[in-house]
Amino acid sequence: MTALVARGLELRRGPRTVLAGVDVAVRPGELVLLAGRNGAGKSTLLRVLLGVERPAAGQVVLHDRAIGSWPAAARARALAFVPQDTETPFEFTGRELVAMGRHPHRRPGAGLAPDDFAAIDRALAAVDSERFADRSVTTLSGGEQRRIAVARALATEAPLLLLDEPTSNLDLEHALQLVGLLERLARAGRGILVASHDLNLLGARCDRAVLLHDGRVYADGVPTEALADANVAIVFGVAAKPAQGFFPRDYRLPEGVTPDLLR
Image (cartoon, rainbow, N blue to C red):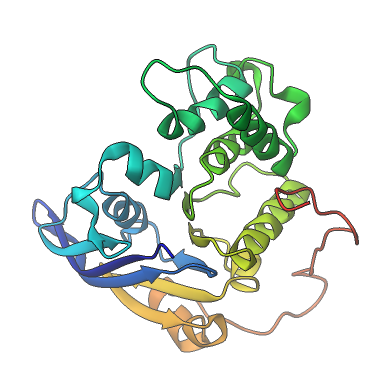
């Protein structure tokens, strides 16, 4: 099965070290949280893992093969991405954008096949977006655009999924639905890496947490160890204490609410 492994990644921008000896892996069947302060290198690391930015040193390997040696279409079938910025100025409908996720599966010049339409419908249903899928994305809210972006990645049916702040702009219900969907996709065998600042939402549900600090992996392990108070104090510069008073709340979806690809 497909795994994504990075070893010894080094990257500099001018005098600043962005990545320094980073080792990280995403394997089938696991949901991994990537966290760190603003500017820690999370988005840069995602671009390097995708093969769209080259490190000065180190290597990214996708299924035992260097990421740069993969043909673009084959790489896109194996590795899907949801960027942090999902706004588009063009008058595409949501469904048309999601259909772009099927491009790696199509022969040049070929139209959409029945399998493509089925994958598009499943992806839209997974993020509860059918009711606005045929509207121009320029008329959608930020949260609706975010859901369309996630659906486009899901439509590729790639075994590996990388997401950069996927719950930003989502209301509480849809953020919980999305994280629940990612959990179920991981249980079904996909490898998922999520860059997020929401330690409470993702930390409680991921299999591993990776903390970036000063361009290095400061911690990598099960959440209760990687997100230990001492690590949070150094990586984020804040004290972690047990909840007191009314907040934080443990919000959950009602029983039986599981709109996802696996229904």
